[in-house]
Length: 212
Image (cartoon, rainbow, N blue to C red; front, side, top):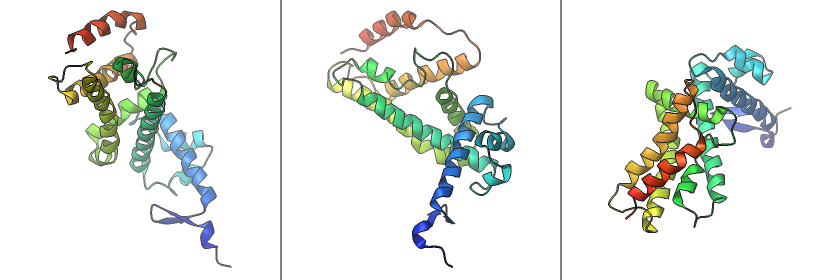
């Protein structure tokens, strides 16, 4: 008896039963966790399958190879971070200081007890886009969306008179993304973390310097 067309969906050019999509999500979640734990280059299909409680061969029903899975996992992590940023920004009062809006985009905040999976995956995404041309093609649109969020906050602050319009918004947006990114790299490398309160005077002086 032929399978009802309503019970079949096409994913990546292949026909799938809708319930089977859950296994793909499990694999991606497991891959994100594994890459976050050991890094892009050291992650193994066998360990990812173990995390997903599936046989290693099941991974290849969805992904052509290890690199295909890893690129998809990093892309999923980036999209998740962008969605998380949008939710965080929605909770920030738009009349509040622009610096608080930028702080809402930081992947690791003061309440985190240590490096987060998000923090790790963002760094891995930049690394993969640098080293892998196929990964760059897949990841760059979301990386640019992440940058654009920062730039848009700067532009809004300029329109509100908080930041001089003589300053390049794109350059400032990159700086405010590069700062937490660089700190994340240092933190993951084992450098001691500076107390959050210590940043207050530095940030205060910097924001004064870029006012009109």
